Image (cartoon, rainbow, N blue to C red; front, side, top):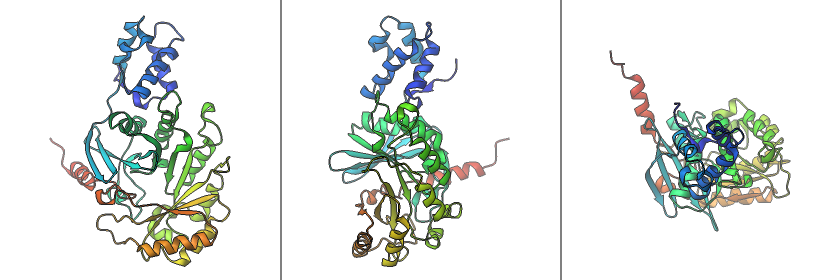
Length: 371
């Protein structure tokens, strides 16, 4: 028999199709697959034999229990800073995911990772110092949300793909995970409450923009939200901070952002802007940023820099942040200042990652093989 499938990585349709292969009668997979899917995500349990749908067919329940595996990676650590904390889950092979629970006024946001490490190389980011170690599977992505809701009992209602990794660099797994998270028969997180954040991968943005044209019921991702890590008002500044700008400059990036569908008046793109003292935080930078964003329906998220380890950069003074904010507002650009949460536990924006994992991986790869 083939290895058990990670059930958290299966969409409703995929689970029903797999269940149909186990069923003795063609066409019956949907009924039983739906029962398993709803029990899994609404109640956090996977026990086909306990479900009424399987009472008349215990053999099918046994087959399902053998075919599918519910084993989210174990939580190995929680590191808190007030009500904000990150939890780590240990993957096979010794790597680990990092996810951050962030309290909002009436609900909680979960910042999820799509990779272990990252290959984008942003110079101000802790994750970039790890390099790239692994693409997470769709099941490993969904497991972060499942664990937060069903094991840690957190009222997660908003998902942001702003943890470790570049989501558009692992887009197939991310898209599958988003479909699972948004399914109304399961976790039922609206697409308007799921945000994909990218450093500015133009092909990835265009692929997501095409999907965002159609509703979920037609295979699309309409109302999915997009955030772009801009962090600079000009190519000259961005080149020094983000190597990705060498692949797609700011003009190409803006052209891609103009393709993003915003069907409702309340829809907009998030322009993430990490303010770094003496690098991108002057009044001239603010005015240039407002000019760049002109013609885009965007809101700037101002993020005072959360220093990585051994960082050559510094967080700007509060008065500099306020002055930058006022300059943007005076120029007619919508913006808001994102409060710093989790920095003392290395759980804030740009601080996720365990460099020791990279060192161990390089040591193993460099070691001579046994004769």
